[in-house]
Length: 92
Image 1 (cartoon, rainbow, N blue to C red):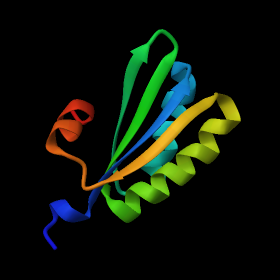
Image 2: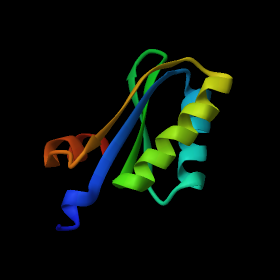
Image 3: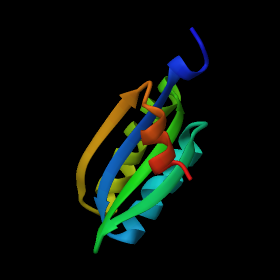
């Protein structure tokens, strides 16, 4: 298995910048992942975690727990072995 095959990207859609920042913060602190916050439109944000699959899974679980306390979680997904285009779009 190559390094790329074990990578994943996790996305959590939230409402509100503060909720997105708090979600990203706990994701980064709970697991060894790269994180970013992408503004989608108006009050909608996507919080991104990228790294090894297991680390991303932990980050998403912790991010959902934290985010639900201060904002509305709209959706989430974990994508194993994401395409390079997806990585390039979310990880700047």
